[in-house]
Image 1 (cartoon, each protein chain N blue to C red):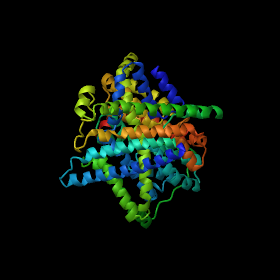
Image 2: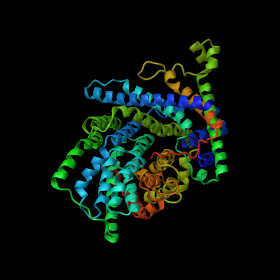
Image 3: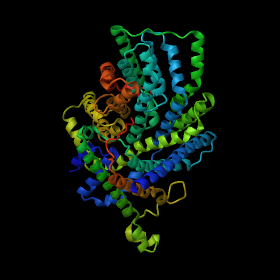
Image 4: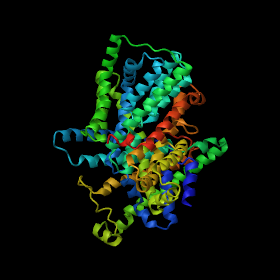
Length: 181
Length: 419
């Protein structure tokens, strides 16, 4: 069950990530055109960077499902088969630990409970917590940065989903390294 | 405890990006500085807010488009025009085509995969030893991260906070030197062991090969010209190059189907996010490096050994060779730059561009050495020659790279002259 949801969600993540890769390409091309026409659009760079960041975190979460990430596998590969599955399980546990920690960090950062406690009154929330996450603006886009940062929730929760699914599955996520240099 | 956590996670094959993030978490927890947890996710995100990083997905996309668009074959044919008739002609063609490709593709593994498929069967057919054929191709792949554009240089430039366009320029002379060194190796092997004779194209054949390659040649021209003349940032020229590659593959060569674009963008997103996410994780790992004052501590140790920048670079080269054998090149750049670059710049006044070129070339060498030589395994699986057989022919090329590395370490001007 988990495996299925994880697989579906990974597909959604990769589709979105590919769409964002398209967006990055088009935005930079737009930048080239407008700049050479002498009418540069000031918001394009920032938007392109956020698209890339979203693409990255969506792709990184999906990578946990697919088990393709750069890893040092010399030692793990040299282990006897039985031990190797054990180590792979251990890696799954570590990845799950990482994901849960990320969820917790997002929770501390966005502090949704504190926000609700202050009746979603930003001034009262900021006065009480000195957490200015919801006040920070984007430089050129005219929206609050918190919307852009919300990808960290998507990433953390997606990573948690995938790593739980990996852990329940007999297959390990280790031993599947890719090289990119 | 943090170093232990780091080493353990790395060795049981936890993805490198997560090793960095987990070590940072452990360090924060261990030192009781838990207020940093509040901004942990934000710090990760902010590591990506860098205009230069946009070049990574764009250069990857250009590589994908070029592959599907039938440009590789035409570039190889054009190379045939210039060097095809010499003894060992195909080996030189291989090298020259690799140089062309390196001006389009920024990743050694990608280039080795493409070129092994294209060149080794042909070389074998003409009577070359398959190990030598695969070795020449694999060595040629090392040009990819040195001749601009280069994925590694983009990442190094971002980490070192130096202009990526200038970093690309720094790679031009070392790239040419490297190609020259490889050509010398091929000549020497031809001299001592004999290589099959090549055949020159007839004039009409040569004209048609050059003409067909002309559109494809627009891509490296756009990339290098745009950066060299300062018209476009590396990011912009990458976008323009991908557009040109798409249009040529689709409209001129008619080998690229727009339907295949979706799949290509997915691959681009997958591969780019793998690398860029490491940078996000490295940003939180930066806390460990800064709070522990790792560069300062290491500097105290190294400066007690030597005051000479050249000797320092030789020591660094030795360390990097070992690191490169174990860790993927880009991951190693992300890991090592923040630690060693401050020492190189502050204690030895080494130019950051020179340091970057030496470091990147050195780390990419690890692609061709066991035990984790991914480039070696790719060349092996694509050509059918065993890794050992390739290594037997590869060592003169590796030696040539080492000589170039020493030269680059000794003479900063080789890297900085064009900037």
